[in-house]
Image 1 (cartoon, one colour):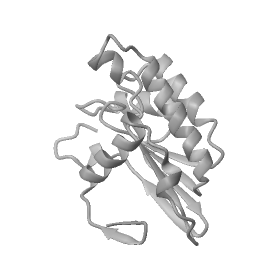
Image 2 (cartoon, one colour):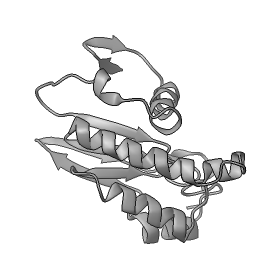
Image 3 (cartoon, rainbow, N blue to C red):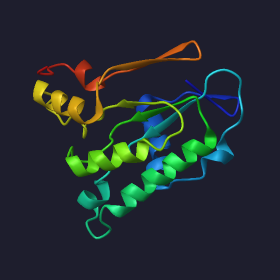
Image 4 (cartoon, one colour):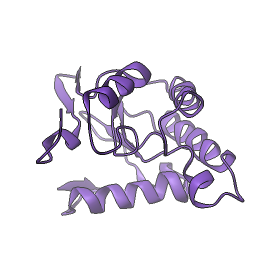
Length: 167
């Protein structure tokens, strides 16, 4: 369940990610209009930056729109000033040094703590120990927890919950 503008909205994780990723990654809407100041903990979710998506799906547009969208989303997060940002993968379309460096450099501009959760492009199926090791090398652990304002935020690699995972 999501509480948004004092209304309870029942969404599956998939529908939540689709709606949030549309706002951040595709349309990059101004988010300040949708937020209200609340007491307690404020978590912002940035989903599917997926650097390299335009390159693979629309080669004519190239890599630049992905990077511009991510920079705009980071700027909007800094304006919103949440207590923490949860970056729900996919960070990149294909795990590689340039796209990972660009993601990490963009996220380093955030003025609040953030946590990364891998997606299926960050650790491509079938999941193996070598792919998780590569993710660790580029982004850190695929299982993270943070204590913020007395709340424990936990993030994990949901691909490990799938039946038949090799690792």
